[in-house]
Structure formats: C-alpha cells, structure tokens
Image (cartoon, rainbow, N blue to C red; front, side, top):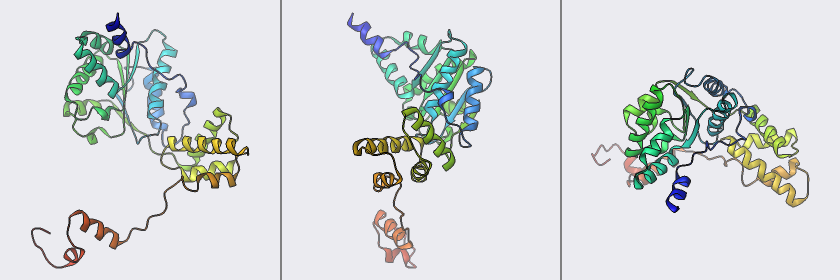
Length: 288
C-alpha cells in the first residue's frame, strides 16, 4: 500500500554506511591521530571503551568518514550487530514523519534497539526542542543498555547554542576528541592518497603547490584535485606546474588583506552609525 511505501522511505532500516569510508582509507596525521585512535577503540570495544564518544572539528576535516569507519569496523567484527548511522537533521525529519502518521513506536524501536548509534552533525538540533527531547530519551536508553554512541559536531558541546543543559552534559560524559586542520605534510599525503585512488598522476611540486594554497580542510583539497584533473583532461595536457598555476590563479587561497586602524575605525563607525571623529574625541556621551 502507499502508506507503507512512504513509511519505508522515511524510516529506513538500512545502516546507511558508505563502504568507501573505512579506517584503511583515512589518511592519518598529527591533527587527527587522537580521534582515529579513540574511534578504533570504540569500534573494537563498543559500549566499553569510550561512551559516548564525541568528535568535533571544523567542516570538511573527516568527521563523517570516521563515523562511517566505526560502523563498518563494528560490522566487520560482528556482522550481526545492529548499526545505525544518521544525521541529526534526518533524525528530526523521521521523527516529524512518525509523529504525523502515528508511527512513534516504530521510530523508538528503530533507534532504541541498535548496538551502535552514530549521529552526524548534532549541532543541527540546536533550537529544536521536540527533537532534543526525543534524542535525550534515545540517548538514555542506549547508554543504560551499554550500547555504543558516537556523535560528531562542528562545535564543542558547550558552544552549541540553544541546546538543553541535560543533553550538553551527556555529550561530555564520555570522551571528547577533536580534529584539527592538517599541516602541509599531512595535506600533501592526503592529496597523493586521493590522486592514487582516482588514477591521477601528480608530481610532488604540484601537490605541494595545491597543499600550500588549499589550507582550510580536506574537502577543499579534494575539490582542487578534481578541478586540476578536469582542466588537464579538457586541455589534453599532463598535470604540470604551469597548468596548476593557471588553473588556480583565481581560485586557491584568499588575497592578502591589509588591516589598518583606519579600516577598523570605519567599520566600527559604520556599524554603530556614528562618526569616526566622535569615536576619536574625548566625548563620553551615553550614546557613544
């Protein structure tokens, strides 16, 4: 029937894991080795080592990859384990669907009976009170049953806005591991790893050039690699230093910005709708 089709789409029973996101394909370095070690330990001893495990770091640094890697390693060790990966946004959408169609029993059965609960981007439940309430009870049920919980976030628990303190406290019950942006050697290693996987021939000088400019995260590195590969294919040329410079002259890195006292004064004056002369004067009016 139509309702059951809609329900199966909304409340998926598959683990939703990406088979390419394994520990073996994750390039390790100083910036992520602590997070990798804790994730490995949680995957090999679910519910015993670190629970909950909370991983945070800026976007594009590999948090999602690690989350999938935990789930895949658990299934490798125990194929009968019930592993559930979900983004907090999907958790909320499924909950709304189940509320609407009186399927909350099914929803709770799914999430409160898994062995490993992997939640991506928990910061998105900020300000969502009903979702936070449901997540709180799911967390408590799984934690009491000693089931493994791994959560990722762009923010440290105390920095997530509009979230209940009881939830924030639970995120800090276990272990918190952070992932930092990779240094240049690590970025070069990531580039070579991804190039090899894609069958792209990359010289050391080109890899270093890209790594020097694409500093923010791994996603930016990957985008740069795809871009230069596409340019080389279109031009029918090998990937050379000249091609790299031409490809990225308007893309990689931000132009240096000159920050002067005058810039700061003008920005502040514009923002507060006052004059620079008033800011610099000896006036101490309440309005200023």
